[in-house]
Every structure is written in C-alpha cells, then in structure tokens.
Image (cartoon, rainbow, N blue to C red; front, top):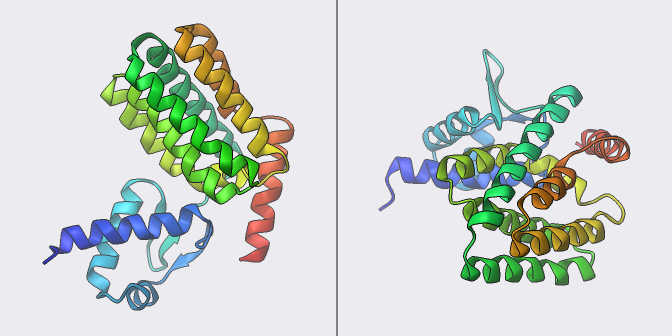
Length: 222
C-alpha cells in the first residue's frame, strides 16, 4: 500500500503535468477539494503535493487565498530564460568534452525520435521528446550538481517552453538547431556547442513577442 508521502509525490507529478500542458494556467486558483475529488483522494495528500510544488516555485501559497499556479512576469521570464541558456551552455560544454560514444548514440537516437513529431507538426509529442533530448545533454555533462540545477529550472519553465513550440515553424527550427548541437557535441567542439545552446534557449526579439502573445491567449482562454 502506498504511503502518504508516495501518494503525495505522485499527485505532485500529476498536478505539475497539468500545469505543464496548460490545463492549469498561470494565476489559476488550485482548490484542494476539487483536486481531491478529481484524483479520488483526501485533501491531505493534495495539500502535501501543493506544498512540494510551492517549494519548487511552480505553485504559490498565499495567505487566505490558498494555492495558485505561479505567475512569472515578462521581466522575470526573460531573466529565467537567460539563466536557463547559461545552464544549457555549461552542460553542453561539458557534454562535448565528456560524453562517451555510447552516450553520443543515445543523444542521436533522442534527436531522431523528435523527427516524427516534427514531421507530423505535433507540438505536444515534440514537447516530451524535446525534454528527453535536453536531459541527455544534462546527463552527458557528468556534473550531477549542474544537471540537477538545470533540470529544476527546466521544470519551472516547462509551461512556457511548451507554448514556444506552438509558434508557427518553431518545431522545424528547433529540430534544425538540435541537429547542429548534436553535430557539435559529437565532434567535441565545446565552444560551438555553448554558442548553439545559448542561442537555442534564449528568448529575445520576435521569439519573446510570440511567447508573450501566447501567454495572453492562454489567459484569455482560461
């Protein structure tokens, strides 16, 4: 029988997934009773799951208002993507130096798995395959602390990265950028990998305008 902690962790993952795929939107109130009914559990593990999500920055616990899905303002979003770009770049630099031939093969397989989703223009399928691709780079850095930090920030930005993939032609450009990253890592070109990943992650100019427009559409729909 699952312990309450195990149940809370599973619920945390389920709620986090609903946030990542925009079924729960930034700023939306998270009613413990409704969530308990939806998942067929008591409020206790729901409350524990929300506390866990709050510790990750994905949910905010507000006095007398309860929990809401964390909202990230435009300036903070830019700052977080700046840091994410540097984490990715650092992971990429180390991966280009440290990945084994077996890890190269796994990275290439993860990249190729994205192709079918790109060809089908399926941003939801690509979203998950894209996550796996980037996780291979984090693991390939062979720096556990750095990989953990990159994964934590990646998780906070999941809803926004998913929105990015819905912008016209972004799947194709993302896949093409991945190809260049794979080539640079396999060739051992650390500095080229850094430049490519930094550019791949950063949001500025038109890409930032597109993301903000998507956020407005999401809030209007909510």
